Image 1 (cartoon, rainbow, N blue to C red):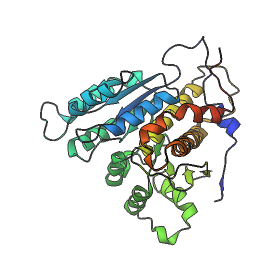
Image 2 (image 1 turned 120 degrees about the vertical axis):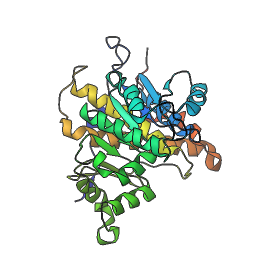
Image 3 (image 1 turned 90 degrees about the vertical axis):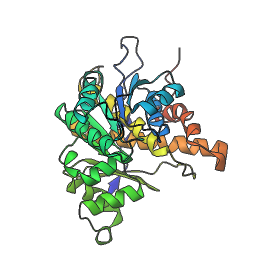
Image 4 (image 1 turned 135 degrees about the vertical axis):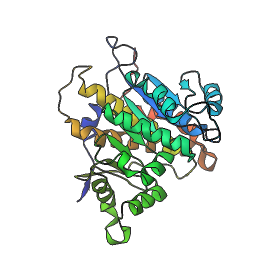
Length: 319
């Protein structure tokens, strides 16, 4: 199954216009499930990246110890300290899930995993939240400790075409092992499609020197130049930008703005993933060019706007 680069003009069609006729929320509402006492940066990077790319609103669902910290990072984020770890007994998993899912009517897409931790109550809560999102046919991005959840409970996403998994090299290897895929028996370029098929057609974003994206039927590749730093948090930026692209895809499906209807619903996850990979990799390149070895993930945040402008081929913010 040869990989291909999609027509960028087609991916651009997913992006809503900047129009005075649209109101707050119509350009994307993203929810991020993650954030624990030890991990506050990951959900912040994911959520703020979603907004810097162009989502109107972003909600973060985290445990209380993380909530105050994340609120201090940015006033733009809506932070809900609903999650709990095993040492907190003031709420059951059922109660946690109910509080989070009560907000689903305000969301277009869910990102699960950044800073989630492997605490059992956090993992159990996230799993039930994902299952509830499936019931509502909501797109789900799964990254970081959310992939640990899938590794142990693949049925959580199996056969769900609106799930997008974004594993790095180590996470990808573990997912393959959990699905009984022997990486040594397959061509490296076909592994993403093998894993997708094993999970029933979910979209896999196999991050690497070249990002490979597959839904089991086709493979897209993103070979946009990235930076040479491998600092923590870059995957969180991808999960957030992907959340925004998928939210835009939902609004495209719903006909929120006038468009040509050229994109089939089944292709949205693949095109959204390619768009997010392209913007994220270019953001990394730009930040690395400026800061070299001193580059941090926070530097990438400032490059999302310029990378988006390059992706679109023009600046939209002209008055």
